[in-house]
Image (cartoon, rainbow, N blue to C red; front, top):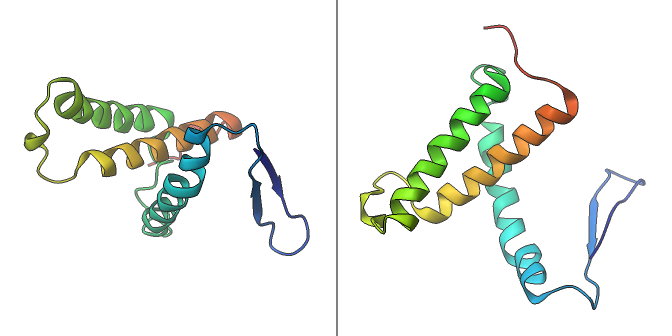
Length: 117
């Protein structure tokens, strides 16, 4: 898979499949990634006022969010009690978890650990 950024225009992300790509990778990029990205962008837009953003508590806050999501997944996937999830399903939890992981990576890269409360 070739991934590049179009430097002309608005910097669009260009993803070009290659013959060597696995079926799983192709499926994730074609089906899961666009859905995840749209959901992440929508949730991110709710925090544009700067209050209560992921950066308020920084990496520790991300760890807490990640841990909370993982524990929900443990109940559903490991313990086999998906019916106990009442406010969100496994797919939404997985998508949220990916978002929190990307936010943690961004924080590590930018060293933007937290903002003052």
